[in-house]
Length: 95
Image 1 (cartoon, rainbow, N blue to C red):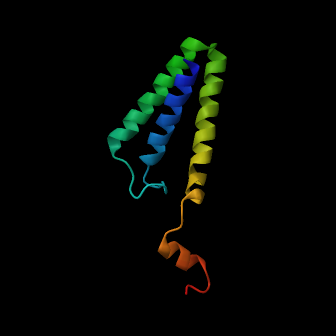
Image 2: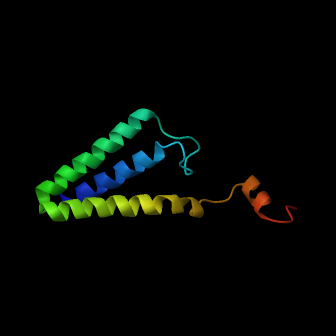
């Protein structure tokens, strides 16, 4: 149950991040209803954590999952392969 709650929290965080207009991983951001789905997944994960572990531990696990996921998502863009115009802009000699 705890692992399911953490996975739901991660999926909710991803949906919230991808629905924001300033995200840089997708070509365009997701629609508005993905924001509400992400929020509901995050709240369901908190409820599942309340059921499976003590309350203080549940809040701590939930907040740490949010913190870690939202801190590491922007760095995924560093691992994306460079496309042609990014390579030519990043080098001095584009030939």
